[in-house]
Each structure stands twice: as C-alpha cells, then as structure tokens.
Length: 324
Image (tube, rainbow, N blue to C red; front, top):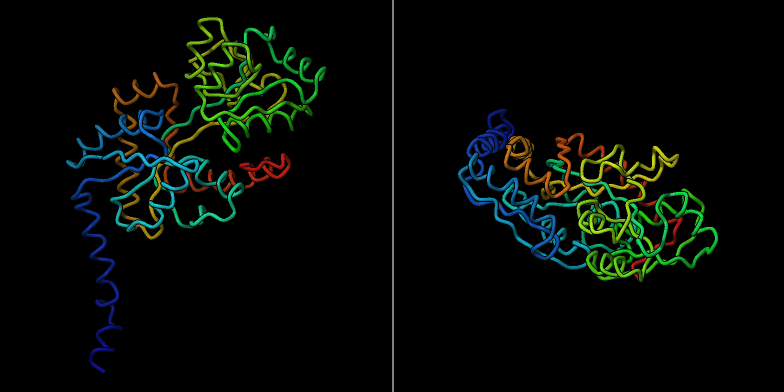
C-alpha cells in the first residue's frame, strides 16, 4: 500500500519530467550524429558542415556527419527512426525520405509520418527547368511548342524514377497538359552531361548545379519552380510569373529526430540550429551553394510536412509513378 501511495504521489509522477528537464539543461554532453541519407560529397554535406562548426562552438560537442546512402535515403531514415530518442542521433531529411517515400514505397520499414519528429527546417533550394542549348529553345513558350508538336517524344532527363526531378517533370506535365519522354539516369551529374551534349532536351534541377553550364552557354534557364526569383540566376522568370503557379518544387532540408525525443531536447536543438544559421560564415557557405535559409521551428516544420504529403501523393497518383 505504501508503494502504491508513493507511486501515485505528485512527487513520484513529476520525477521523470524533472529528470528530463535537468538532462535537457546539460544536453548535449556527447557528440551528436547527423545522418546524411546520401553518399559523401553531395550538397547535403555542405549544409551539415555549414551548421556543424557553429554547433560545436555553442555546445562544446561535435556534430558528426554520418553518410548512409541507399534506397533514396530511406535506409538512413529507417536507421534514425529506430535509434534511441535521446537527441544524439538525428537525420538531415528531405521529402525523398518522408512525403515522397510514403507515396512511392508503401512497404517502408518505418512510418514517415510518425516515426520521425520535426526539429528544425534549415534551407530550401528551388528546382528550375533548363533546356539544352542544342534544342534551340530559349523560353517556356518554345518548350511548350516543342512538346505539343511531338507529344511523348521530346527527351526529358531526371536523376531517376521517383526523384524530385522526375516529380517536378510530372507536375509540369500535369499543369501544362503536355507529355514528355522521361529518361531516368542514376544521378544529376549524368543528366547535365547529356544536356550539354544535346542527348536530352530538358531537365529540372537546382539552379546552383546548372549555373556553370548556363554560363558556358551549354544549357539555358527556362523557368524557376519557386515562389520568387533567385540571385543565382536572377534573369530566370518563375513559373508563377509565366502563368503556372501550380508548378512549384523546392528541395527543402530539415533536421528530424526519432519519435519520443523529449520536447525540451527538440527545443534546444532548434535554438542551436537557428543560431547556427545566423552565423555569417555559414550564411556565406549556404549562399554559394544556392541554398536559401528558410528556418522553421518544429511546429511550422510539421505544417510544411502535412501539406507535402497530399501534394506529392497526388502528383505520384495522377502520374502513375513507380520506382521501376
């Protein structure tokens, strides 16, 4: 009876919460692992390193980048989802591991909606439509005329089936009532090489990746799938300006933690990342990579995710897109 009385007492009930609060005040007391869901050397590494230096300055603990590629990043997401929710294992995630994966891979070993919790949205980079200089088209009107003259025959490259570039193509096709010959590759670099050679006519990719070839006059910027023009290629109009506001596709990157991570730890992490994004050196690094700082805290980030699920789910359903 005495044991039951103690367990039911207010002190007994609040003890775990007090312990978690005290733990949050000393967090982190060990290195924190940030899992990057792609092989080393990609654009996500740039973001991780940009915030990592300030993270260590603020906490005294390193932010260790752990690259775990495979299956469009879902292997890494599953690893983090099954990790201890102690704030020491995080993932730098994108729609590929969450809303897109949910619609494309119904048999995932984790539930993207519930097994990972949003911590901090860091950056976003708009995708844009580019045309090969060899194609002869220079603007959206020319692209649409070419597509309508040869429906289903104009080659349109992407980094692979179900990639964000592929989904941007399908979103574009659905918005304009056009059909294209989708040519999937095994990465964006191969697409851009064939764009320069004139093997494929069109692609969607991030502006920073295409800028060197734009400057070399091997590819031409057509339209930006973002809400406003970008400083990377300021001459390129947005789809919104050209009458197609529904064509909007951005690569966003945000930090997520395993389900069950204490709210105090999540809040502490968000504050650290928000401060890291204010650092002038980090901002300069991200600007050079073409990424726009778009910080959102856990609640705002959660709302973004909730809008992403139906949006990409509908594009995938209407386009009958599969990974095969």
